[in-house]
Amino acid sequence: MKTKERKNYKQIFLWTEMIKRGQITIFVLIALVIVALAALLYFLVPDIRVIFTGDIVPSNYLKGVLDEEIENSVNKLSLQGGYENPEGAILYQGQNIKYLCYTSKYYEPCKVQQPLIKSRFEQELARMIQSKAVEGAERMKEEYRSRGFTVTSAEEIDTGVLIVPEKIVVSINAPTTIEKEGRTQSFNEFEFELESKMYDLLMIATSIIDYESTYGDSEISFYTQYYPNLIIHKNKLGDGSTIYKLRDVTGDDEFTFASRSLAWPGGYGTE
Picture 1 (cartoon, rainbow, N blue to C red):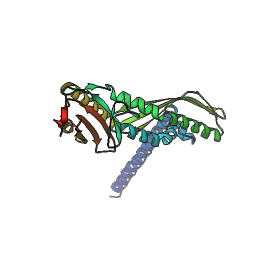
Picture 2: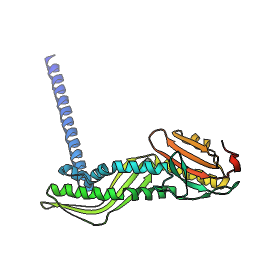
Picture 3: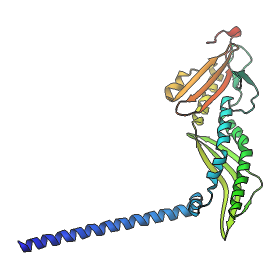
């Protein structure tokens, strides 16, 4: 019995040692993977490298400066059909709303006034935030200089906006080189994103005005069937104009525009 017990004990001991060694090997491999990923991020992602060195993250810094300006500009554009100062607009509840499709005649479909709604919105937004982007870039350079860095940058700064599904992408073209104690970092463009449902709203608005320019009126129930988070308010006025207000219930995004299509004299045909 004693010999058998010694054999069992030896087997248990060997098995335990094998488990311990296996666990150590796994921990070592995990540690090596973490170090390799950290090194890869450090060399391939400039913003991560900046975080490791404890300095400013340029894209995050500029986003913080521009956040409020972008939000206010988007809100203003969204209430006025994508224009800061719309011409060819209707005054409705104290707001000038751009006609995206219009005809002055009766009984006829409207003509599209702005075929590229999304592109126009992007251009307007980029122009509206340009001065704030320049200010933000200057403030960032001063922040670097206050920390002992030497900063050189291009005199001209260009701002771009791209509206894509689920977000608005802002890019600031401001080539900048930052140097301190032999360490140099160079940036050509700073980019950041903001969550937004504006892409879907602009695409739906484009579809509505295309429909009105072809058939004279649109059927909004078609859109709400395919977009469960969408609410459309369609208000026909006595002069034949229609005010559309599109809203995504999952956020604060909305888009308002006007059209005048298949109008009837004397208010006939209005709801």
